[in-house]
Amino acid sequence: MRVVAVPGTLCSPRIYSPLASALPDELDAVDWMTTPGPWRIEDVAARVADRIEQHGDPVTLIGHSTGGCVAAVVAATRPELVSGLLLANTGAHMRGHGDVDRILATIASAWGPELHAAVLDRSFASPLPPDLRAELLGYAARVPAEAALEVLTSQRDLDLTPRLASIRCPVTVLHGIHDRARTLADAQHLVAHLPGSELVTVETGHSPIWEDVPATVAALDRFR
Image (cartoon, rainbow, N blue to C red; front, side):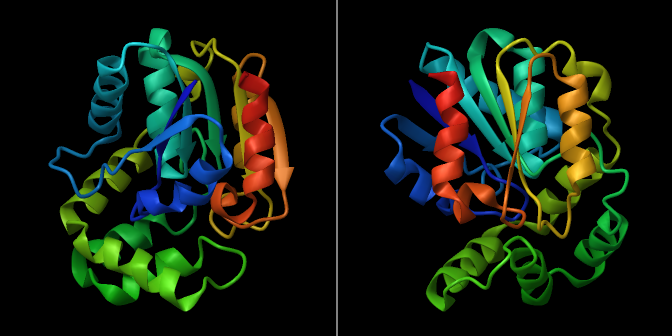
């Protein structure tokens, strides 16, 4: 089984490296922020769907944070491409994601290392090793400001709730309960509107796909 993994805003595909090493399957982590736009959720989802389609067979699709929104759109609009869906610390909408407008304003007025570091550091419950943190900040520095502004604006204005019932593949919602951006209520809302889905909570921050690889692998085992 092939696994396609979509990272969140400003997040390097490198975040999936430990998971790739732990899986028996091929994992294809998508770098969607440093490639040409447009970068609205629907546009990124269409490019991810095209990437899956080129390989022929349905895949297990993972989406983290904003990448979870992208992955859900792929599963809803191109169900023939997705055999299983893992959504990690994401949500159907951004109501309650209290600082999104502040982040958008900062992207527009003060894009740079300080913002990159703030977004990165709040994505993990424990501080990252300095070399890894530097690598991830280096990736964020290569992301165009317009990519982050466009995707987060489109995500802010999008509510996927009406589309969730059309997702028919098995779904696991993985949620790190120490997340400072997404609450457990976001995960519970997804499960309430996704037929046959399962909620798995872990003792991590916003990025359980990195912070708890064994739990992520176990969550993916549901699709095998």
